[in-house]
Length: 304
Image 1 (cartoon, rainbow, N blue to C red):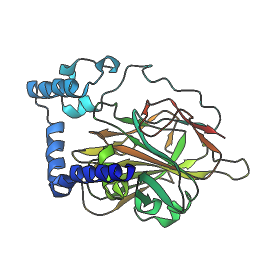
Image 2 (image 1 turned 180 degrees about the horizontal axis):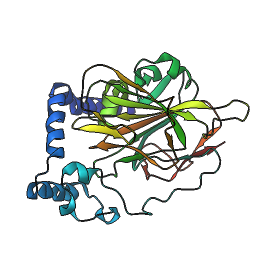
Image 3 (image 1 turned 135 degrees about the vertical axis):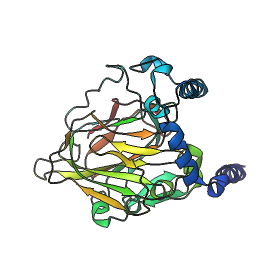
Image 4 (image 1 turned 60 degrees about the vertical axis):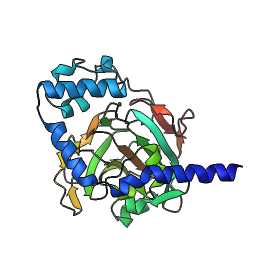
């Protein structure tokens, strides 16, 4: 019976997730960060070669395909790609590019201020944004997309559209894994984990109308177990430090402009990106479906 199968699947997910509540996730992440940042010579090269074989990393796409060329594991993990490896699609006026390589977790409408995570789980935009109710109000009835980066993926994050940076907030939190199983088993996962919220002035998205001016949109980098740090191109490494306190940086008085497809940040080990867009005539790529593979530079959405 479907009901019995569903309950059995739910129990399996709970069993799979339970150890994460017990593990010392902060200590493991700090250790992983030290190992990933170490310049260990032959030991680093052995680790890189093992990782490539274990996860099936395609080094033919890398700007430098030689595993021995990377001084640290972090250098390998945040490797650049060859020029032209991710051509940018023509999305048309107001269109959005896919910002990462990975897999689609979920996407859709922000309904009643809530974002769908997985069957039986959602969370509020306010919680995701570190408690900022004024910012979250901009996305009421808007759109979201949650994209998962697996260990084998390219881990630089790019702009889905052109934008001017307004602010950045580091929100302290847990460090659960963000893989699909954990997303099905940990309530409010992406609003519980440590994250970096980047807010841009949206003058180029599908929600912009000539008579309405610009509106903010947000790109959130979500941390996870053994994600040693997250970095942005305008700030560098954001974490560590991990102070346990919300930290905020204002950029509205600066002119930090990033073009569509430009790099905006990177993960030092894999994680998830959540994007929030205001209401507007946005039409998602019709080929998109939860679990589907994606590549940076492909069409994510067009103006409806």
